[in-house]
Length: 85
Image 1: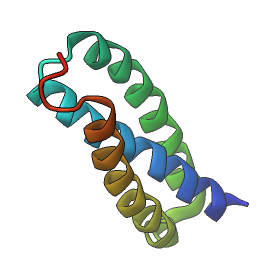
Image 2: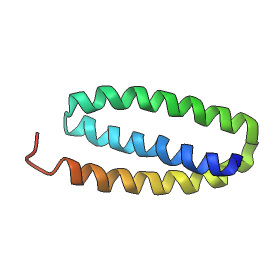
Image 3: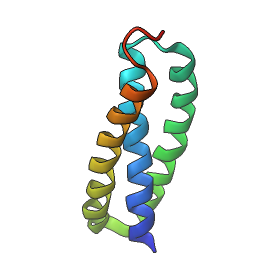
């Protein structure tokens, strides 16, 4: 169960970081503000999982993180098409 939570939390945490990066570059200020709070919450959850699971969590966290970043790029590009500000 801990490793499934690791994949999920890492996916969402890195998804939010990728989404935030694209928000900042595109100056999407409202989205940047909201995403910051979500990032903080998932960072705390990730630390909690790491404390419980140790170094082995890195394997499952890496899987979630890589999928999360790709999903963030695809979704952000879809939601904020060029010219839509």
